[in-house]
Image 1 (cartoon, helix red, strand yellow):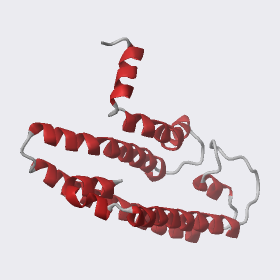
Image 2 (tube, helix red, strand yellow; image 1 turned 90 degrees about the horizontal axis):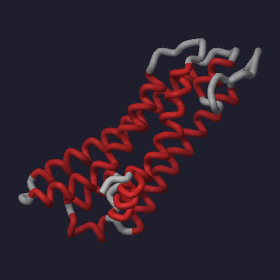
Image 3 (cartoon, helix red, strand yellow; image 1 turned 60 degrees about the vertical axis):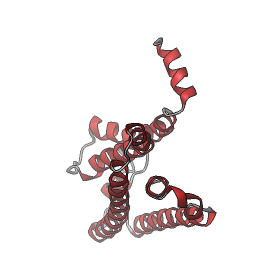
Image 4 (cartoon, one colour; image 1 turned 45 degrees about the vertical axis):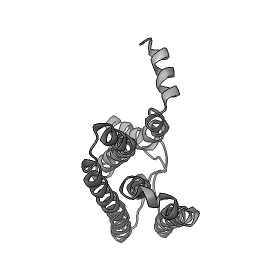
Length: 191
């Protein structure tokens, strides 16, 4: 998404040539391959562990951190592998998004008209809001100090990054649509 915005704003005349079906397939394949590798790493690590005791997971779903709490074997090596791969994946995506948006903002600030700058910023803002929402809630969930007892805050944060962000995604992106804006105004009673 950041690359699409970058090409649309920084190189608008080359958009059709750069964002062709081949580029879209390559980006989708990159996302799918990294997701498959990430899930294979988690699955392999979980199957390598031995579990004993209870099987009660203090979460809405079988999250990796909750499964590691149930393991009897040493989970240090598994946690380090997952942490290193996750950090590389997240930092790579984050750096790509930051570099793309720095280039975008530099190009937008060079646009002479106020209306042109507003239009360019309005195309980028929904993506930044969705990414920020996901990164902040996910980062809070995984970077907070671990506790042995579940708390309502843990469950609420899990709902925020696993349910709320995907629900907000289409809403945030569709707010730019004039028909959606009109429908929201009618629903809220504003004129």
